[in-house]
Structure formats: structure tokens, C-alpha cells
Length: 258
Image 1 (spheres, rainbow, N blue to C red):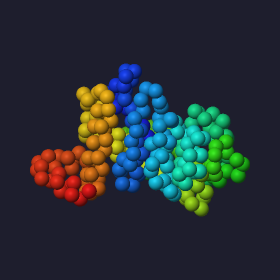
Image 2: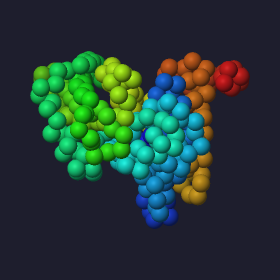
Image 3: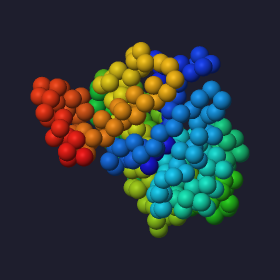
Image 4: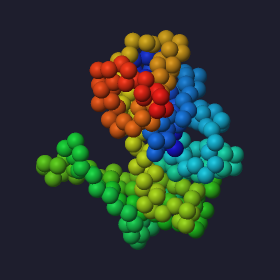
């Protein structure tokens, strides 16, 4: 399950900033399982635990970006929700970042490789993972990862390399390199499978519904529609919407299937 935030750029909160929502998104089904407001008096960090509080997370793997690599979040997930985590490590946790970056990555072999091609780009990803014997400066962390993403433009042969670090509480016998790569990739997919669909297919960022709870309500309805279409077997949401629009009775079939 991915936890990630999204700004509703067409809507504004009382402070004049874009309204923001935090969502819990199932990697496999593509469904939004919970959603919460992030108003001007709070932040995504403070909304993380309330978002997940009422969900059954036993043995679930929670993925999140570096903003949520917080000690309190890790303790909450492991000790209260009996869940697991895979968290990105960046410089917002300087001591942890320095510790993970200093690991002997040059001596560790690549344990997983992936290649992708699409939208005129090529992408290569490699993953190294190591069990950390010395205690990491983070609750329950037992494995560290180095992910390298190389993106090429497909024509000039130029490649851009980004190195990312991550940690997990799962030991090697519970989380193989292939599992870890799939969960990290699954977290990034929230951009394509949810945020992109709401922005492009439903034009969420251009919505003129801006006040009160209305932006969150409309985002919830978009999540519901996307989820209903996915449960009905739709892979391409835009294509499914066009098909339904040609015959209104088809929407009843979708609702019946869900």
C-alpha cells in the first residue's frame, strides 16, 4: 500500500495555498483505500497516522516517500498496526542518509535488474540490498537498498542516472530483492495510476470547485469512479469512460459488477 499526497491545484485552502489530500493506495488493485485532508494547519506528516488508523494493516507492506521516513511512523506501523514498511531515505533524515550512503555499496553485487521502454524513453533500474548488522539509526530497520535509475532519451544516447536509497524492517527471508524492487516500483506507480488519471482524464487540476469540503468530495468521487472501473476490469480508464459515454446503461453494468 502506498501513502502519498497530491495537491489539487485548482482549489485553494483558507490560506490561499493549493488544497492537498493524502491517500492510501493499493498497489495491486489500484484502489484508494483511505483519503484525508491536509489543511493549512497540518502537514502530510501529521496526517499519516490518522489516515491509516482505522485500516487493517496486518502484514501489509506500506511504501512511502522520504517525507514519511519518520521514526514515529515506523514505530506506529510495526508496533501498533503490525505492518511493515519500505521507506525512501533522503537528506531530510541527515544522519540516517549518511549512514546508508556510507555502506559498502561498491562491494555489493546487483541483485535485481529491470528494463522499460515507453513514451520515447528507455529506463534501466538496478537494485542492491544488504542486511545491516550494525544498528541503523531508525526503528526496526534491518535491510538497506540502493536503487539506480538510468533514463535515456532514446535518440541521442544520453543517460541520466539517479541514485535512491531505501530501508525496510523486513529481513531477507521475508523480502527478496525482486519483492523489494516490485514494492518500490509499485509506489511510484501511484503517479500514473491515480494522480495522472485524475489530472488528465478527469481534469482535476482545472476544476472550478474550490471552496469548503467540495474539492475533497469531488476527489473522492473520482477515486470511486476509477475504482469501480478497475473492479469491472478496465485497464485504460479514459477508454472505458468513452465507451460508457456512448451508452448510459453501461454504467449500470459497471456498478453492478462492483
